[in-house]
Image 1 (tube, rainbow, N blue to C red):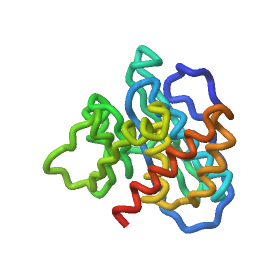
Image 2 (spheres, rainbow, N blue to C red):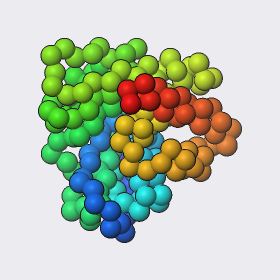
Image 3 (cartoon, rainbow, N blue to C red):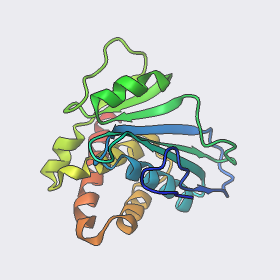
Length: 200
């Protein structure tokens, strides 16, 4: 249960009820406050639970300042009951600030996937992980809302992992974000999906 906007490592939800064969997948979104880091994890986990019938648990932590301070959120998705909300290492790292990448890169598995916004993050050299540069801030700005960069990342991630459909993700976003920002967020997530298709 959510305990408050600044609580450390507060689990937001856990649900069960899928017979699909799926290995656990752990994802960390990280950046700074105001980028929608926690919202990204909540939307991803909610879509997995409510649309795909999977299990999910989500955790979050903030730095000393909510907006502009360090922020990270983790989500674990599985076809099986999840015993712990904490993962020893991550399958996917979405980094939207350089300081976040510097802090959390070591938690990414060698066979993992790194997704960065090149406006804020330098591409690491000589790493074994698959690295994808997604100019989410630029794409979101072109769609009318810089703060929708997190939605671009969600769209990209949906296409790369396909744990649920594009339409399912859009439906959860439409139900989650304020009505005044629904259209711009949906345009941003679709743009992220389009960016991902160039690697397919």
